[in-house]
Length: 255
Image: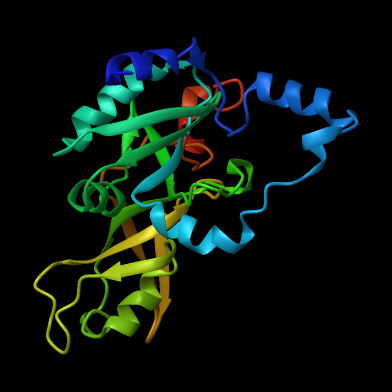
């Protein structure tokens, strides 16, 4: 089957849920088979436990992801836009696993590294929540709740930007590990800000300031690079202020 047919066959309608999940058909079949009595060959398990390590070693450059949105969208349109955004040197194979749950298979290390180390990737302003997939674990077990993003913590004292461990401690106030910081070890930072790559929990409000208490307590503002759509009322990624609750909020409540 060629790429176009494969993608089209997996795009039956649109996705409309921000959470992951198996298709309704898969769940219906699971419920239907649960009470059946096994007979004949059905009673004997195929045992691959002794081969699992080798099987896992054969799986590479495979990603599981979802689009963090409650709005419906076309799978085909999303696949096309992500190919354009990723500009892969080789093909990318997509597979739909649920209403809003997908796999992407890359075919060279360069494409894999560029996508997994880049981001945050977006589709129509909504973040792609991604993770490496081993090819065997139940897709329902993946939380898919964090995105990587570069941040700029403005005005951090020079002494906190000269050492990696101190800079990482500051960055942990903004997001979770793994954390990367840009420091000039033992020397002053030529930038006016501390640049750090952190992982944001999409179910927590964005951090606006990092409070630091040294000689006095000061708040250092945080800027986010290439931030997906977020709400200025509740601070969460994934929707606009006019889509938060009934969408009616006073300007002085939005920050």
